[in-house]
Image (cartoon, rainbow, N blue to C red; front, side):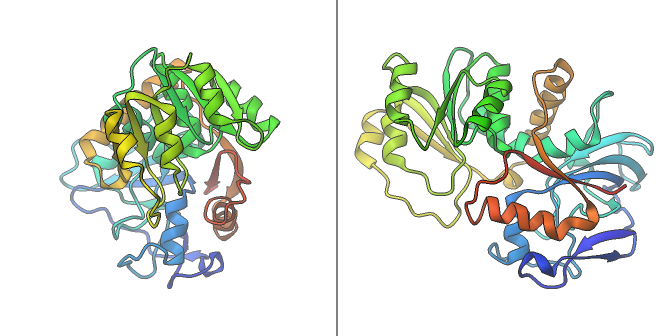
Length: 332
């Protein structure tokens, strides 16, 4: 099979594209003929060596996938050949990834695709959508009518937070860095869109919430400013963090506990399969209802995986912010 892979960690240029043996599914694995995959920051951290990992060699990167079941292991009960599926959680904790014509995820990390959903869209929403869902509903217990704030409302996770919060009737405030991104955030459903370059974010949040503050602050940035977060959240509000594994920010202990706040953090791929499956079920329902749409900004071929990693790394790790959505690669 054709695959994008690397033998040693390093710059995006370590990624090669060529022939590797087609994998055989284990007893509980589903072999998927991959149509589309997407790129996530964690893929670049593993490839660069920023996240140390014991990787098989050669190693195929990639968490997300969509395609068709090609074969199943002897103990698989949930899927049959010919079914369209999607999923995530590959390319981490030593698992081979998805940047190939075939991948073999455990059936617990595979979800049925609904008719009408494109493989590109399913691949694009996988990791970011599950992450957003876990943060909003497992961690923050978001309810209808609550005010939810998320930084970067046109980014991978941010765009999912905006749409999912709206899907349950919450009111969403988000930030962007340009008028073009502001229009996109509004199209995704954000109630109030702020420009972090020109607006006084804390003052605007106070204005839009009638002085009461936020119920939920969903932070997608790597270096959170907890003083500002605590200031903007109302008593008994909830803070959610999902990024910045090397960050060591100052924490305002006093104001935090006096307001009775809670702080939750998690890494999606550490969460149990059953919890993630609940996320996937809601995501499929919202896709069918038109309440959730993929936010794809760049489409490339699998053979361009090295370039895709370069674009992702420049935007996330190096802070260019050039991406306003997901990079999707297709195998065709």
